[in-house]
Length: 261
Image (tube, rainbow, N blue to C red):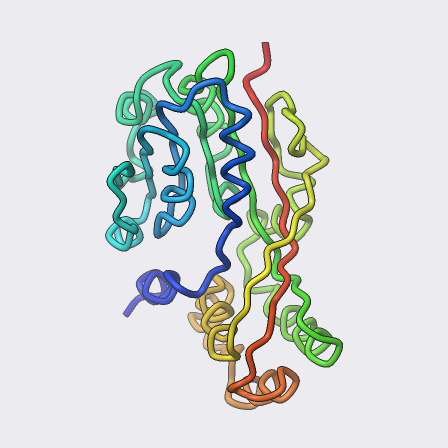
C-alpha cells in the first residue's frame, strides 16, 4: 500500500471535525446560497457541512482515492480534478464564471498552486457577495500538563519530515499565506482569525490522527519510524493509558474574504 493510499484509508475518522457553526457564519456572509465549491475536499467533511446551507455543492480533489471515500450527500457532487486540468476546464466544471456563492478549502490550501487557484476562484466567485474561506489547524495541541510536553518533543522530531515550504504556512498559522481578498471580518491576509477545535478521543483515536500526518509517511520512505514502539509507549503513558478518553484542543486559524472591487 502506498503512503497516499495509507493516509486516505485512515483519514476518514482520524481528523478533527469542523464545528457546524463555522458553516453557518460563512453562509450568513454570502449573498446567495445556490452553489458552493469545496476544493481539496478529501473525504468531503466540509462539503457535507456546507450542503446544509447551499442548494448544491461541488467537491473536488486531485486525489482520486480521496474522492472515492467522499461522504455521500444528496446535494454534494464529487469530481476528481487532476492537476492536468486547465483553468478554463475547472471553471466550466464547477459552474462557470460568476456562479459560486461560497468557496471553502479545509486544511488543504497550503498544498495548492496558489496563484492558479486564486485566479480560478476569482473567476468563479459571484460578484458581489461571493465568499472564499480557507482554514487549517496546526500540529500544536493541548491535552494535559503531563501529555503536552511529551507531544511537543515528538512534534519537533517530526517537523523536518513535513514538506516545506508548503507546511510552513501551517506551522506559522497561515500568517504568511498569500490571501488576495477583501476581508469580511473572519481573518485577513497576515492576520488570520484564531479558533479552536475540540475533539474527545481515546488514545487509539489520537494515534490514528498522528498516523495520518504527511510527515509520518515521508519519514517511513526515508527509513525512519517516528512512531516506534517505544515512542508510542511514552505517548501512551503520558496520555494516561490506552483506554482513557481525553479532549484534544487543536489550534485553528481561518481567512475569509471576497473579491476586491
